[in-house]
Length: 411
Image 1 (cartoon, rainbow, N blue to C red):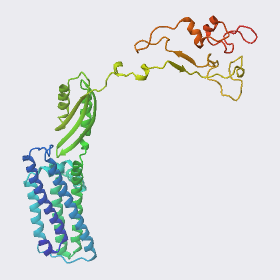
Image 2: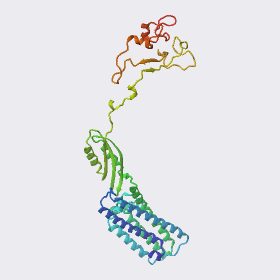
Image 3: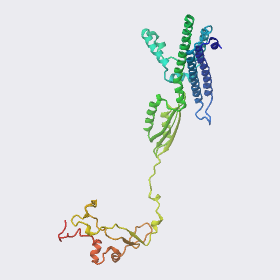
Image 4: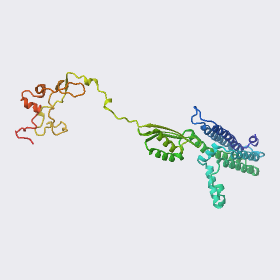
């Protein structure tokens, strides 16, 4: 009502800070409710994320109000209305008193934590630079100005100061455009103050790992990996459950002879200093030695036919070979892999009977074939001496180990 009677958009922008203070009181009530509630099966991690959601909603609504003020201020630059200063200064002090009383009289745990953990706003940085300059002149004020100032108290004082300047300029010179300029300044300060808090609370809702604890977590995980019996630490995930509460889960692979309960106690003791809500999954090494008994024998191996044929590759005619180097005489053929041919490539397939010697342990007939039957199964070459044919078995291969074409012994 006072904002509409004064027609001041700067006072309206400052009133939005009062609405934000009301949301901060609601957030404080939610925080007390969360402290009294215990985890349930539906909410096994507790209800701490409700206060994170309340902080995120309050800061986002304050930024939306600042954007609305910026839009209205852009329209007022085109046509500036007249400002009535009758209740402008009174409304400024009433709003300032309410804002300071709300922020300083009640211990608001969620907003107190966010204001310290979030990154500094541009307003805080400029005030910090100004405080260093003042403390350089008057060192006695270092205990008051140098510590990080509360962003909510800072924006309340800065907004009230802007309204006081607006009141004086309108009263002295009737300069109504300064009201719009003050509204834009208050909206920018509100947006710059709330944005870092929205980012911080939004990262908590997204279950991200806080940047300031990543180094400590890496150090603790390295200590856990060096514990007795621990082989590997994997699938680790740590996130912020609530303001100041870190949760995490980790899988630990241990030796087969290690004590699970002992390793679990040591791992929990190391990580509990930083992670209050921790889930550790212990599992032993899962490698298995292969055994021969586990390898099945195919049925077709036990039931062989009466005759089985071993094919052998055929060899080219002897006239295609060079008697000196035993390589193909055709220049177009590729060079052989070895400089000498393996004897026996021109032998036809050998037919083996089941009466021959077979390995033990697979259900085969045992024993050896008679000496005379060997010569009749293809090892001896027809037309040659039986004894000489059995020695080599490959007498129709070109002379290689005997004499050369001139009848001289080869080296």
